[in-house]
Amino acid sequence: TLRLPSEKNRLSFLLIEDIIREYLPDFFKGYKIAGSALFRVIRDSELSVVEEYTPDLLKAIENEIKKRPKASVVHLQVEKTCPADLTATLCAAIDFAADEVSYVPEELDLTYLFEVIPQVAETQLCFPSFIPSKISTENIFERIKAGDFLVHLPYQSFLPTVDLIAGASRDPQVMGIKMNLYRTNQDSAIVRALKEAATNKKQVTVLVELKARFDEENNINWARELEEAGCHVIYGIPAMKTHCKMTLIVRQEEDRIRRYVHLSTGNYNEKTSRLYTDIGYFTTNEDFAKDISDMFNVLSGYSVPSRWKRIIAAPHDMRDYFLDMIDAEIACQEKTKNGLITAKMNALEDTEVIEKLYEASGKGVKIRLLVRGICCLIPGVKGLSENIEVRSLVGRFLEHSRLYVFNNNGERRVFLSSADWMTRNLSRRVELLFEITKEELKDHLHFIMETYWKDTAKTRILKNDATYARLADPATAFNAQEFLIAHYAGSP
Image (cartoon, rainbow, N blue to C red; front, side, top):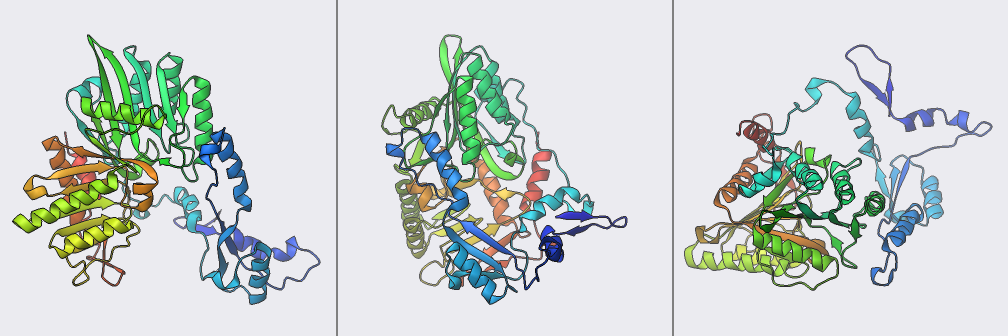
């Protein structure tokens, strides 16, 4: 986009393609312009690397990325006014079936709006600014030893997470750091801290997920930088994406070794921590520490999965665990008529989970689902899903946290996870599900879930005809995200 000179209090922008279209005769002097049209080509982004037989995974993925500009076309969007002969010529040139073309009446790619936003300073067009609530972490290790705690992003600051890694990198008592990096930001304070830790002669192991889609190039660069700094960089299990978010810090204290654990529903990314809602968990619980230590051994190839005490992992046993939890609610419903499941995730499409939820609904279990994006379950169908309600909340922040609550006959069980109820998460990725057992933290997570469920400003409800409808007039409705900003701002 190009911002145009304009009168005071006016903002005028012009799309670059409109300028090009206007001046086509000047670009092609001596030719008569018979017609023009915009088109957008989307190519296959999958990486075809056989990891088991690849001696240098980093180099192999780097080579695959270079092939993307010439990968096969999977989708073609064309301006609705494009002449038929021009569309035919385009399809022939890129070897795409003409009957699969999508004709778009307006702009083909709205990502240009991200360029416009920083240039718009109109208060009435922007969300009110806010400062995330800060948690006191003058000494992050003492803070975690004092008791397990949660951080709810972006309402609360991401600084405790950064402080944990940065503090560990400089603390002479810290012996080692292990961490999984799926996505992170440019100029990452966490990456800088990891490199500093290695320079300070600490044992630093970093699992860098090279196959994080569209972040492959960034992660390749991070992997090289970390290796050059002296970190031990690993890439996980062949043919699996390592999508869980975890950190383990080993520290010598008095007469014992203490391990500090951080687990999260979202990435170690300072930029998205201000835009995505996620929940991080800090603990020194030794069962958690042993499980996460064992998990890193599995991912580095030094052991096989064992029976965990506090975590449930995909693809090993997470789907079965969820199915068992749903079965437990069915049993509660049959015995005491109080079966209830409330779950929050990004997407729901796993067939086995959906069928089990339908079964639970048929037995009378009440099921409340907050699914921000894709949902292949159809709620409210008589005889199939009449006890299921599905809502989608899309607001100021991207809802990214995964939270699962099972009533368990009144003895509520609350879980956080990196995984959605999707086949790729449960079958083809390394994910973690972990239960929060501290009562005050369980109560707080339940409060978060209920706050989201009460939203009527930004929520749409999924109907049994697979369409969405607003719950209420957004001008007078309850806005959960704005409520949480105020709630955390007023918290001690």
